[in-house]
Length: 323
Image 1 (cartoon, rainbow, N blue to C red):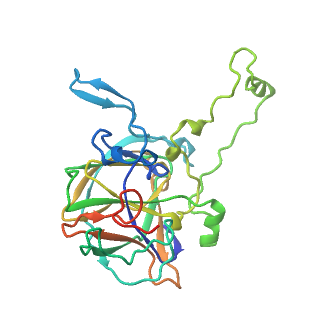
Image 2 (cartoon, helix red, strand yellow):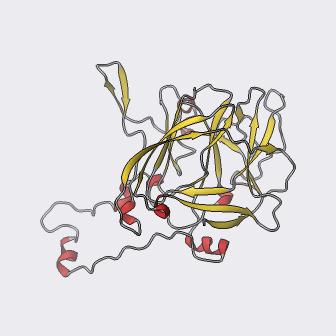
Image 3 (cartoon, rainbow, N blue to C red):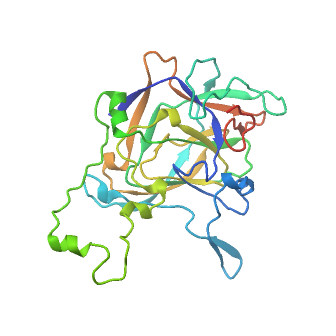
């Protein structure tokens, strides 16, 4: 039975999925030569990955476009994991509901005016609400979703990426009145002998190295490092809309909603991750329940134009936002 946590009424605006905006949660995989992100102002874009010519000069090979992590050596069972590749055939979500007034607390975007339901041209937007009832995480592995058959300019079907930072363990206890649901145990460290300590001294007695090596996790991309045992930080939850030519990697331990497809047709995703077949180590879930004094729980506001294409209200590329 998943752990549950109470949540306030909070409405989350949509953002465009860009590598910079998503950096703390994972990586965005896209062609840097054709992606809209490459045309953003410099502070809002990340440098393109290194590239080389390939296939006898007929292709450009971009190097290290995402960061995969296998942290199962930290899992309680110590059971090794293997790389797995699955397919998720995701149908459009049928449970979007009509917009209705609500007194909700500000999201991470502050006092964002979500009452305005016109786009820049003055055309009326269709506003629907998506209730987020559960978040999950994969504490010891990254997870990459690669859409298949969705065109970059598809106006009738998109997918949403909903993510949240991790609260400190102490704050998690305040939310539920009990310890965090899935703490990562501290591994027992063998006592070090004098010779062990001497061998690790710097500068090294038999080498020219004058600085200690980087700690284990500093070598990882920040989004791929362990997040700790805390619950999701709902007040800083983010919702991104992705194009058909974008794949996304969730960093290890990143809280996220199950993949959300909206529009006319399903999307097939190839999903790449590590797994050791120990249920609570491969996937952990938290059910979000509206608090007693909350009219609704966590809600993503989905605005779409007449063609059904999602319109963003916050962040880079917003149609209209008051931040």
